Image (cartoon, rainbow, N blue to C red; front, side, top):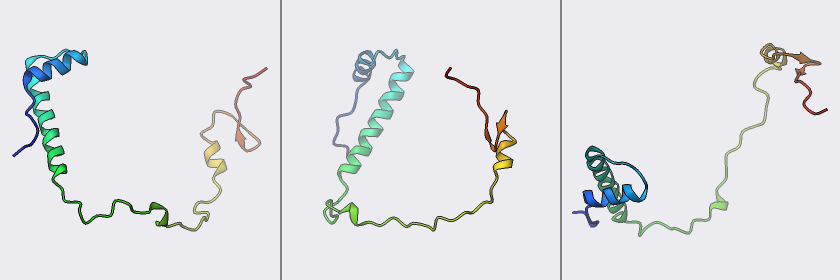
Length: 99
């Protein structure tokens, strides 16, 4: 059984008015169903037993797994520069912006 109060169509219309959202009758029933579903999920989350979980876990003790920093692809400068509109000296060439 749900602990939350069921949201009425009048409440949905009031929320829509406050949010400046124009709602028709189909929208009102859709949003009423959606919001009541969300509050049901919240009720279900409230009932989850977390008594055996330490909420003060020290996150700094966890270690990220790192991989070796090694080259996995060959130098592809020429392949990349084939896509450039203009290139010079092995780099992208861009027009001068500042005088």
